[in-house]
Length: 285
Image (tube, rainbow, N blue to C red):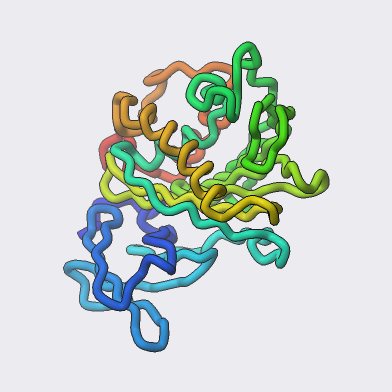
């Protein structure tokens, strides 16, 4: 059972799968070291059971995904107002299993410095390698980490982009394992495309990542949008699975940050404030 998992990790909502991937028959899942089973009833309702528990787990359907929790979340599933805008396309990009801490994946998602070297000629290119100064903060009223005023030159910022542009970014970390990116929309200058990454920690050093996008793009084929995002994430997976340690270091001076790592620094500080240990190199107290 999960008695040793701290509340900052346990009392959160997590995605298990896209709703379209939940069959009527039993399907097995894993979350925070616990084996789960889902079953879809004839009325479309989904039941979730956990090994070693008599009572079913909560099941929520939001953003095209099935969410649950092993703890007692104090708040509802994170709000994404853009998801309810009628002219946006909801693009579920599947799930990717990664042999790394889910916190490592969130931190990689927040990092702009790797764009020219990992996503060469797509999200970045040499000699445009500088990460310009940007602002970071913990928004205490909503208990979230934000990075704003981010910008980076990108040869192909999105599938619909027709040339290189300086892309504006905002990053939002809503929970330790759920993060969002708001970025310049090539098709609407006054709006943002929204890319979400919902991370399902299977065990401390392994997870599944669920990318979901809400885009202003009526021209691109759905399969092409999914393929583009999966290509980006699979490039990241190669780097993530070769990082050592596999868990996220939270000890002082374990890894030396640079000016470009401001979001990572404040994210790790926020995790420490929340007492998050699962998926880190720290030992439970």
